[in-house]
Amino acid sequence: MKIDAQIVSYKLKKPFTISRGSRTTAEVIQVTITQDGKVGIGECSPTGRYGETFDSVMAQIASLEPHQFDRATLQTLLPAGAARNAIDCALWDLASKSFPFEFDLPSTIQTAMTVSISSADNMAQEASSYIDQGARLIKVKLDAEDIYERLSAVRQVAPDATLIVDANEAWSALDLHQTIHQLVPLNIAMIEQPLPAAEDERLKGLNSPIPICADESCHTQADIPSLIGLYQMVNIKLDKTGGLTGALELERRAREAGLEIMVGCMLGSSIAMKAALPVAANAVLVDLDGAYLIKDDIEGGLHYQTGAIVLS
Image 1 (cartoon, rainbow, N blue to C red):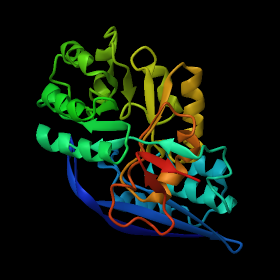
Image 2 (tube, rainbow, N blue to C red):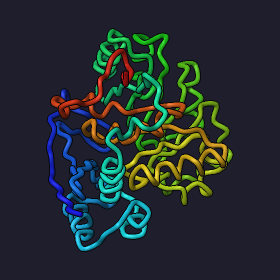
Image 3 (cartoon, one colour):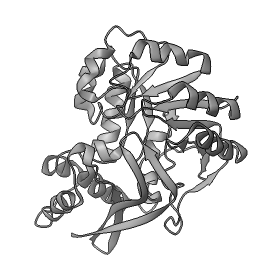
């Protein structure tokens, strides 16, 4: 087994801004595993929020070189995170010429199209461009400023779209009960991670009229017990679970606990988006527009049309 890893940088079509900052490029690590004449490819996005750097993730990948392992053994060699994700997905790809299409996938999967943080007018303009392209699910990134104004502007240009909100832990200083109830007339379908993960207990007894989804608070199936009674949905990302193997385990455990499933992504190419499709196929909400947001996707990448990933 031979493992090669390289850092790849993709320019974004436009700046991408969330509550923690703005980016104009998406840097990822792509891993190629060669074994017995077969090749498998995986991709990950190291995340500083989770204590990862490109150097640390590359070092984790390099540490595997002396070992012979399969997907099951890999789970014991590396912790859940970006490095294990790239290797795990490369192993899935290595094992099948048609990965991930050997799973029972629908012909199309509706995905959220993401509006990043800007002025209310700019956010409405971006949302309007997605609606004009046929999108029906819009994800709105927000910090703690001008929440109602920005969402109202987006709702005005997207009166019939499903709107979901991602605060990326930015609402800690707000009166959460008041903020959420103010948004009810805007018909918001879900609010993602309003508080820092360390403040989850503040959600106890909130009785939010809008479902709350755990992102930064949910990495693996081990997190599920602590989320029950606080969240109604979990956002499964392969860079958090450590690959598709962990993602499928998290999906099963979350469903057993009565939690709804969302599938999300980091910025990256279709290599990363494709690997998440087996979980996305049965999710209530899908946010796999990462490859759509970059300028030059891989050859043979996913086809995005009218707010959906078209698979056939």
